[in-house]
Length: 79
Image (cartoon, rainbow, N blue to C red):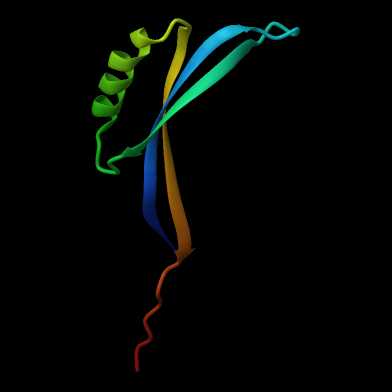
């Protein structure tokens, strides 16, 4: 079984700055690094909602990005 280790977490605000030729939203991302890995989803959402009005563009979504390492778990042998 794999073992995971949290490495970092960041808050990403995505703003719609227009539309593509196919009609999809064209996005600009602003990243805030060094979010505590233990921060709750509600905490991250609250900070994102507080920061979003400081920008002129329309907020598209708030994203929490987690970086995690994956390694094989240590196996134990029995004698």
